[in-house]
Image (cartoon, rainbow, N blue to C red; front, side, top):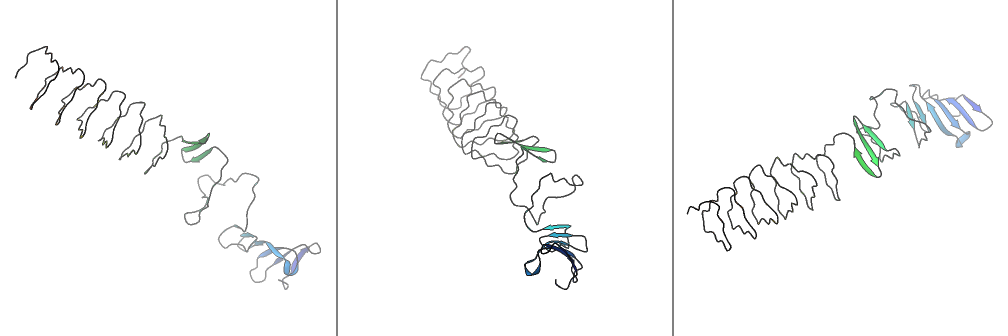
Length: 233
């Protein structure tokens, strides 16, 4: 450095010189062996702050940067923040919204909301979930705890229940219902189609049949049996 012509600002403060080996313009803070390079301007017009200028980046900074204004790209939808190989770590934001394409993720009182559609390949919920709109599940849905539905549930596929289910409202079945265990109905049950029972049916109250009753095996009636029409045996 001593052999390079230089410009010195003040008695022992900053200096600027042209590096003879690289032809870079170097700004130093201080003189002598304690001098530290603060900026390096390369012949390729790249700038290094706190380090030698980069051969690939226009601005290469060693250390943290403090920004007092906005960072606005010169062109919209053109430049990336990080890359697939070189990624930022944590991202801290103080605003309420993140705009990704046509979707908006909002933070409302500590809860995240998505303004557009949300497609999830796998979803694990460990606490209560409140859905106010429609839920469309194309694959299997496994519930390890209670599922409470306040509105209408429409199932276009099979429903496989391995434990006790409690239905407090009406349940309309357009196709067959196959039950491998017991059915306990404490209220009124309305069956518009055929009902085939492979095991015993126990009724504690009144049973009203508006259609034919076809019994292929032994039946035991312990109470009164009122017939409004004929009985053919």
